[in-house]
Length: 125
Image 1: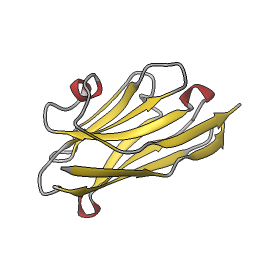
Image 2: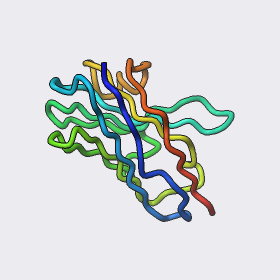
Image 3: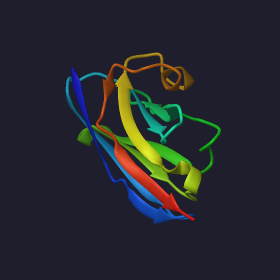
């Protein structure tokens, strides 16, 4: 079992930045594929970024490529999502998720086993 807790959401104006954190606890003595998903009201859930904690390999959805980066601090069992050049369409609840392999795009197209509670990101124009 892995427990995930997100933090760092908030409100920002278009063009601004936010950094989300996802802290993991529980069975963290192995590598996981960690991902960030988002869901806006009335829209389907979208996988935006993933990273394999064992090797640091990352993947980004086209909608955020070049604007978002994902990183990890294995000593802190934490994964970060740095979001730059935010736009109103980025507004959503952002969820951290974790699962075993496969990683990359395949995680973002699946439903991982472990989820955080979500953190709200609101971007105003």
